[in-house]
Length: 401
RNA sequence: CGGGAAGUAGCUCAGCCAGGUUAGAGUGCACGGUUCGGGACCGUGAGGUCGCGAGUUCGAAUCUCGCCUUCCCGACCA
View: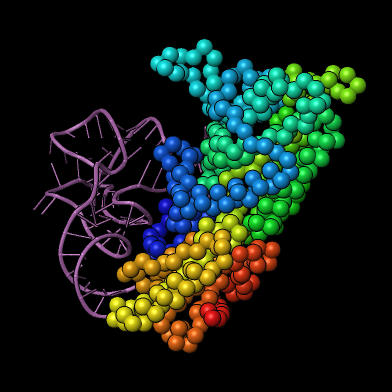
């Protein structure tokens, strides 16, 4: 542990220790906290709201591209997991096993899913018979568990949440196209919703998904200059369909193995959002996924009831006239001074703050401040924000009508 | 999994080396008052299995051993 910090309320500056800054920010902004089991975390309401917004955006793209959601079970029989040799070997060290149940040792141990290719293949073996059954394009939003030696909040946790898409196609080309399409969705999510610049690329032979022919990924660019793998799309070719005995009669009545893909994006992407945009005051969230897009801080004083009443009326009018769908929070906590409220919401990365006080009303204005530099792609949606590079330092005034 | 550091109030830490009344500080929390436009101030109060488990001892936060968890570096990361 380092020496005592002068101010226990401050977070470690990025320039001093970026990793420490990251942990401080996640904990202090109440995105997540450590759970009792190694490598596991609790995602707190503010963090989960962020995930839900990301999830909603990506789920829309998954549906738009013709996929359906479904659900496969958490536990996978060992024999199912073992059929694809490279896959088994790749995942073996990271699988957690259930060996007992109901007070008895199980005849066959059950894997807690590290990913679901095997169980999905085992089921679709019985569901795919004809080229008319293809393509199959499904997805599931689930938790998975991978025993990890070194873990970090969001970036690498033993249990994490993700979506895993799985598809079966008639031809190799169709599968390849699917792999590209879904990587495109990840790129769209990263760039248009999360405002993270990404580089798309192909993983090396040693880094690819075990059992895949090749793996494509988007690598998000972080503020500290590192790249972070933030979504992967795999061409599985016929490796799994052969191993699991999935076949169909093609258009000329020849028996064929379908060509598969799988693709996933996890809660790690939250870590990418944090590291790509955050600053020394804490989080900086992209407006389209921010749980709170606008925070209104009314300036009221107990010794000025008349002015305070006017402020409250003005705030009510702002709330009333705000466009539908804007996620707004009015911070009317009592007994907390405005400065502390500013710090509170800056730590949590709220894109836009509106401050309304009696003086402002007298001058027929409100103070708007965009602490976060919001990239242009994200702006103009529901919330307009400035692109002021000086961020918090500069306050911009706008009309409150 | 290897190397290093750490775990004492919600948080950040002091106390430990040289075991000995009732374990402290700051911050946070509750209440009262003064304040109120960038993390206010004064007062009062609540809050602790000293990470867990053994051992040594008349006596352990303090010494010994084991385990758990976190952080940093490395290996691994599909």
